[in-house]
Image (cartoon, helix red, strand yellow):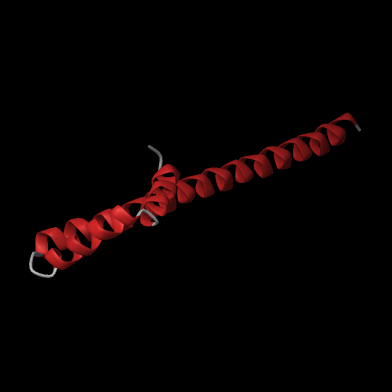
Length: 88
């Protein structure tokens, strides 16, 4: 399951009345149990963090592609200019 799929699932399940009842009970128990609270907090934030990391990777990847494209075009232009000068 991708990060995006987990976010969609988390949004859908929040509207489920059975999940709401379960979550109320889990939150009540978490007030007395730090380990359970930590697990609930982790479950709440994991999908969003995964989507953030995936989008961060894509942003860096596309930025890298843009830099490579600019360098390639610059190299071609310089090659063209230099080859015209040599012909003179």
